[in-house]
Length: 361
Image (tube, rainbow, N blue to C red):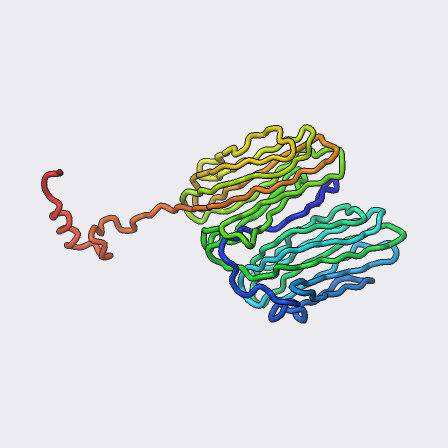
């Protein structure tokens, strides 16, 4: 739940580096993901529809007239295969004026239960709104996934309608994403927020070996109190992580501040590396650099962005882009006594030592 009517514009967890596999959906979402396989349910005293547009899917709802009690509507499809689904989404609507609320979630059923992710956390919506973002999720063959839209208002006019447009729908490869293989696929990344921050992650599906972590905070006026969000990835092995980074954005103009850091968890605690120390970042700003650090099996590291301002504009927005990602795992000799490399420790290894016997050059 957001405080201070904070609005989220992009939320998803995705780091994509490998070329897209499987077919990008053709006109009208054909095949296993086609229009006829989608369904809607759960909305009372209203109308929902699912319409296929060229290379897009349009999910609509209309709950008027009269005050609208709390409700939710679900749009779903059954996953045709195991893998990762990526898509762009755009939610627009009009939820009347007085005490109007709304939210948008994504759900993924699986063998371990149902996972629910907030795309737009439930908040006091302006009468007209427009949110957009990208998503990448792990899906499971034979299980449903989809979107849940919800809302309510206490306005006598009762106008309450909207639509969710889905496009650039595709199946993503489970390997080599962001140059790291299966242990670093998109679903392994996560976001966390503090102080009612509203930040998210956007996938650059068209760019190999690149991740883009984006945020957008709009409080509508009066400045933005300190906000902080963490983008976190686990480490499957001991090794060294190295990548280039750039941070571009706008934290408004008057007394606007921001910082970027990395926190690396390990057996001895947390190591903090400041990429950009907390400072005045009057709009617009741009920073860039490279970083290398050691990670440990079973621990995680986080990229943390923060900021605040005292500007009537009350907006913080920007993106951290990661590229040229490299994960170096030390090579450990599983059998150091096997000097000949034949998979055995035997007399041949003794002969190898004897063959080197004598004075050192």
